[in-house]
Image (cartoon, rainbow over the protein chains, first blue to last red):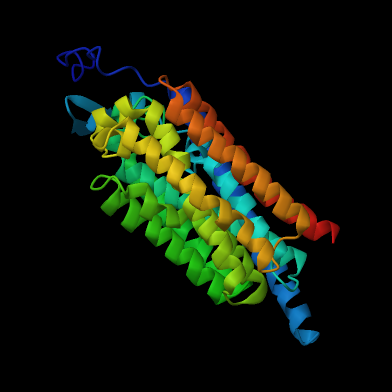
Length: 61
Length: 303
């Protein structure tokens, strides 16, 4: 049975460029990775700062 | 799809429906401006009396960088309408439709709050408070209040960019004395001739966008006189750190020579009928501040 749901739709206008799904996925993956590594770095930073501050506290500084 | 309109121009919110790349989000942080901000923060850190654990010093600089970048992102969100009109700024991610304005705002607010909290928890709350004030000043006082209302926008708003050495100093000492106030004054009085040199050869841009920069409102001759006045004022302010023990003899000599050259630039701008001297003065102003801070840092490290 033929799909008739799209046959009556107007074709996309020139003002709405076709989105490249692969490019969209690539950009999204890049942002996801950047966010992942940023959060990982933030956690590591908090850990290191905690160690340093505890060390300074132990030295009475 | 449009977000805002400005004098017939439209600002797309997201080009071709594609999400922005990581580079677009980095561009929101104004990395070139950030580099000078971080360098001035480093100068405050280095010349302050006392020591700070190297890890905490790096964290302090990171917070200054991220805080400044976050304020820049919020500035780009608020100014997206005029950025689309100005040639200098129309390539930014929001006018280009690469980043959604709401995402840019959220990005800026989250990073701004995170940088202040991290500075407070890792370093000290005095430095965090000054960082918070600097960010708030840049966003609310300069961007939202002054920029579109008065030709004195960058004179008063320049204070936002003058805070980083004070933040660096406070990160080490936990307080604010005469030293960081002098470094604050140095950048505060450097800002007007720096930005007005830019505004002279970009006055058409500012005029189209309706930003009342001094050359647009008062004309070129008045702007050039003001630039000369500020560079003359800057000479004693630039050498003052030496008399208060912040800089040594090398700084005194360097600051005097560099400030005299800055005055010479302003004189050349006054005599120049084209914008060539203004472009050169803009480039020199960046070098001027960089070299002054570099001498301060170098002298302290050598000593």
